[in-house]
Length: 385
Image: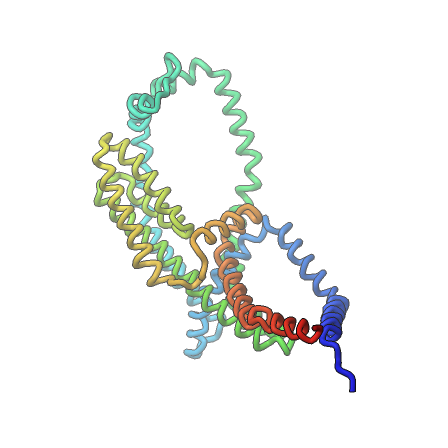
């Protein structure tokens, strides 16, 4: 009776796994090539992807409401139309309420420009050690006089500006087309959402269906909580900043408050940009350093509410990523895919976080992590001795 060599068993097992991997590559290489080509195609189609990405996000957010209306006995098309009408009514009401206030603050902002220029020339620039050339003044009369004295150069600049605007006309028209396409794409995607989900489900290989279904459910839970929670946080911060700055006496509180709330989906960006803009505006308005205390109090309260109340309550730890990782994801998305990349950065990071959690779970259950391979290697060494 001969004793089998454990080293030969390990070598045979390694050879079998390598043969299995090579066979899988040969068997499925067309699918792998198709997947890579699809990614390359999406990269080159990035300039036209914005309405489809935004439309898909809106359809994803509205799908649960349409499903509930279906459960009440309405058809999906009727449910989508009711949702569109409700959204349009809400948007119209908000526009009627906010536009007059924003218009008033824009007029105030434009009216304050001469005072800001005067403060910049007499206070701001001297404190920075900057001296303007002789005869140049940052006021309306001074700018008009400078423009008259250098009319030839100014006319050339004006011609360049008109040329730039002319070249930008296609981009402006493209932006208008994108805005008009978003409702259309959202309507059709929302109407056919369940059919699209069934089509994707039917394309999944049957042996992988339980795992893919579990992954999809976890991803859906993370994405829905993240997107809806983040939108709620942005709206709440816009209200907090606008109300606080108005109470502090800032003339353009609504503009800065809404702007800071809208960019707060990037960690600390809304706080930093809003604090800087509000401080400059308040300093120019009052020309007093003590008034900046109220600005610091407003944004300090906003930051405490965001990190201690709003984000834990409305978003929680759904995405499972460190704030630095979130900032990196947004910057990487913008660098690779521009505006579309910024839009999909957080959802993509959330999906990758789910994938990493599944991978970590598999790794912790693997024989390599648990040390089975090491134990077997020790037995092999003992047998060889």
